[in-house]
Image (tube, rainbow, N blue to C red; front, top):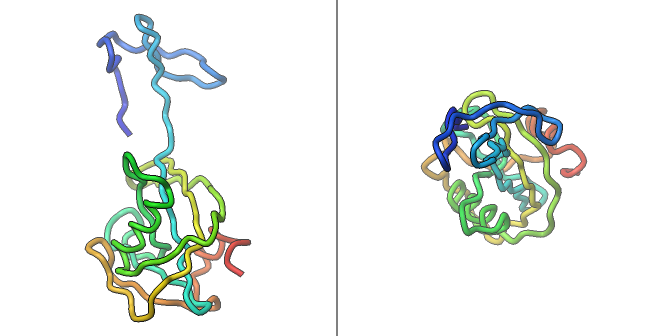
Length: 160
């Protein structure tokens, strides 16, 4: 996340002050406050015939781990649109959002810092095998009993 030393609006050197209960950089000239916000990520818990579709991450962070299809919400895109777009990009599969499961914080120590995961239950619409996208090593279906422990822990209460 970009760290400002100078105000991006008026170029005055930033100072630190307590704002809304936190120390934040602010501009004494124009009152700009450098808020640090989490990056929004849409996540698909994609299911077909009681099997869960996971991807093996091909890029950092957590390269090589099995995860739910997910990605950043882009400008002008709703979380639902991002969820279905990422599902298609990462697995070649389409789905229908059944419901919003919830939202949670995830802190990535490798690259991105704080992220806000918006998680949807998605029913896959077609048969066939997933096709891994450019950023994915592998994509495949898992029975509930085969899901990695860390996956179950992250989404506990939403998978059963």
